[in-house]
Image (cartoon, rainbow, N blue to C red; front, top):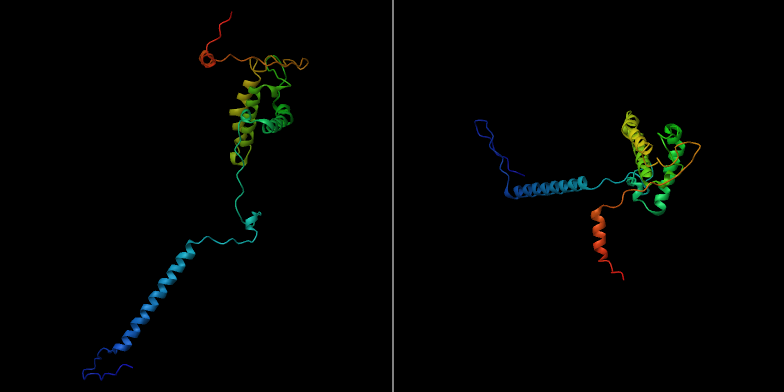
Length: 212
């Protein structure tokens, strides 16, 4: 215990003098408190940087409403002419269903010389490419994220141009059916390769062998 000090006659108290052994004990206690505070701060930093635990034991299964990893993004669409084999056939089947069940009943104007059509349009690569692109654009613009004007944009910017290209009187189907009573199908030949390509191919084949 600190020794009591008799107050002076003027009534003022002198400062308490703590013996050295007690002062050392207080300093040791202060050091321990500072060390504990530093350890607690490190623990708080570790907890703040650790990932939050999942709230559900089913999170790893990705069950709806129970957390878990996000669903994989759907594959990006590819132009149908870049597909091969069964993948292309499946895409062409889906496109044909859309054309027969939705597109033709709504937008299929009467077959005339000014608006030809072909019952075998799937064999016209350029027509397939146009209609597939139109179908992809339809799926995009009917999505709620496209907004209320999405389908108007599809009609204005996609449908009008696709119809004008596919069913033009001088278009890819002009040699096919021009009357509902006369089904026809013919693939129009395209232009030959450019002269530069022909020259490069001839040089790659080497000089022609002389004929006797």
